[in-house]
Length: 215
Image (cartoon, rainbow, N blue to C red; front, top):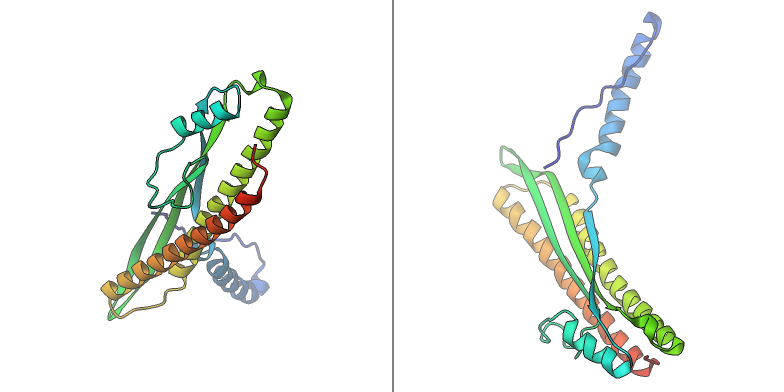
């Protein structure tokens, strides 16, 4: 929960300017509320980290053995596009809000959206023992995997921002239960859109990877 405080600008003026300054003072407060209010400035809090699973190898065959043995284990039902997981983007989103309640009215007083993203990538420990050509092929491949997971990361951030904007746009409802249901509906809508976006991207990448020169 965030805590907001009222802005009090310091104004120095002579007596004959008091009326004009008073009007400016009110305008300054209104402008501050419109521009700097928590709801207007709200941005999702993004936590991003990378995790590397390590393995040792000396040729292409042992590289794949290392990847299969040490890469993240996930359900293939959720990632049917990949028989072997080389890179993985895991993320979770949390949102909180409190109500402002009046007579026959309920609205969002404050809210926050947090997203935590972890990207899993391979790390070939003894790469420097291999031939230079294999090292270069591996580096190119890992960059491709990293770029791929970077798109999934951006989709997660975009979903959090869309949810934040969607909650901010909710107006006044007659009851808080109705408002709560609408918040949940907004969340589900954006999560479904995220799933569709990721599925489309993975399918497109699968076609590309079939024709790509893998290491």
